[in-house]
Image (cartoon, rainbow, N blue to C red):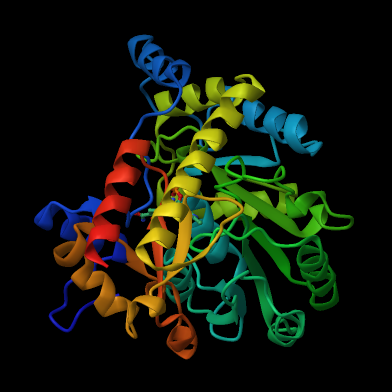
Length: 383
Ligand code: PMP
Ligand code: GLN
């Protein structure tokens, strides 16, 4: 977590956003939209602040939001939850992940199984917990796990199987066969499934299927999500975790010492957002699908090979057809060469698996069409 000089290692997102600022390049590195979310949600935050809802909310979260999250799970997925005991509000999905990992693992004999490449916080949080990270690789171009490798990774030492679906950075959505196998293995080895579903509403071909809806899964699954992606308000950091009351209680026991409570007025705004009509949710996915198509066409035109994502903010491209052999060096040169910032997939992999992702690069498609068109034009000129 520290550099040789004792400074915090900057995250790849901080590093690449700083690189974009320094060079004036278009930032397709860090995943955040360049347009704010629905007016109703923004207005609800203003109203909550003006209405004096600015002091500590209850530890579990504002009751309006707890109820709205339970309603959301019922409305979209048929998952019925008791808002008082099975829902917990957190400071973004990040705190939900942190509190969950810290609550459920107990030191170096415990293992957390993750799919690689993984969202960078996973490895850091598992390291903070003292547990061991076990990576199951997802491979170009469809990024589905090999089920034999998955079965070999999950043992009686596995405390958590951490599943990010839709997946950052690859944009893949796990097949039904894969998620069924995850549930089967969790039962066999008595592991808890922790799902990171922050891109649940950003799917392009089919509605999202939460693992908690699979037969036999709900009793051992903690589902995590966040308002940041669903409502294009990544700076608000309102997330949540839902699941069996005893597991949620264990997460609350840790969460209360991390942030105690968070973001009162934004919680109320997110509650309003979760109750908006279906069209608001699908509208955000529709705009993102158009962005994905624009970016994918631009990357192909420039000579990259492209893996078409089924969800999320991201598109993974292979720079090997452009002569690249080192994606990290490629991304560091890209601002000067093309005026675009992207992130090498090696930043999301453990040392054991890094070489598998050597020439792969992640681009964020969650930008305005004119920005994506300009980035595509710059890439086409540069290669
Ligand atoms: N999980 C994944 C897969 C993500 O991409 C992100 C980043 N947006 C997070 C968790 C963190 O979410 P939040 O900003 O709500 O903490
Ligand atoms: N989730 C976003 C991404 O993957 C940004 C996260 C961050 O900045 N920590 O790009």
